[in-house]
Image (tube, rainbow, N blue to C red):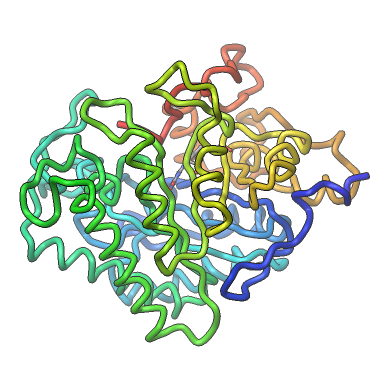
Length: 393
Ligand SMILES: Cc1cc2nc3c(=O)[nH]c(=O)nc-3n(C[C@H](O)[C@H](O)[C@H](O)COP(=O)(O)O)c2cc1C
């Protein structure tokens, strides 16, 4: 009986916000905003189509600073002039009772001078990412770091004014928050780098800036989430021992949930192949109930989603599958699982509200990961113990 799935039960966060079920749409950029970062009507349609089923809907990422843009077609939250458009985004995502969280970030060295219209990308240190054609970023000055911390606070104020139910800090997938935490991208010797404690300083300062904005501007309970990538494969790079220490510190901050970015929910360590315990279970153990968790990665069927929440993990995020099946939750609730689509084809794009730029992105960047019906090379095993698309350098 559908109604008995553990992911269909509601969940109340410590700050009082209740979500009607434990299914989450994770942040997925549609690369369909206008060049200046304002929302397009095509994107609003895409969001509206997916709202209402899930308890929590996390938006595509928005950049908080001009030099923090990571890709073309990305949402911007760098200025008050974006508030009217973002208000439409929040309304679209809240249709039918989903709670709407805006993901915010600074891309740091994961950008390039074409996207930044001639400007050099910035990061903790002048170290290029280990990927083809990565540009060497400029090391941020102390003043510039303080400016970006302030930009995160300003973005939070704008998200509150636009009517969102919360923001998620994108501390994963090798963007700037992670770049400060990582010994690969952060080689600084001042207070922002060096020891593990110093490498946590920037993320913690950003959390404080966001918290201050919530205290000052929110007239309602407002969620603050934090997304991490648990490991890096570069040397030096983030290892699970660092992450577990970071999680201990995060558990004592003013945040409402932790979201772990992985391509496969039950992934084991990428670095220590002898360790067979799924990372998500290690993280859950470390949190020991101090923060609720969102788990993500290749979850497609109701049975796979239930496996996550049956383990006591509070929320399960379903990304690519909800691209293919916007009404996934409604179909499960209505005992109509047989009609859930698990493949996608170019003929479905209008039905699914997927724009041509998004389709191009899915085809060029994620082709083998999308279950495209006429592409036989899809291999669901491929993310089990590897970085997923979007997750690494
Ligand atoms: C088209 C697409 C865009 C994405 N954009 C973002 C993003 O803006 N922010 C982010 O944190 N993750 C992003 N991701 C990663 C997803 O949030 C998610 O972690 C990943 O797709 C694994 O979940 P899944 O197996 O359920 O798809 C994106 C993934 C896809 C497929």
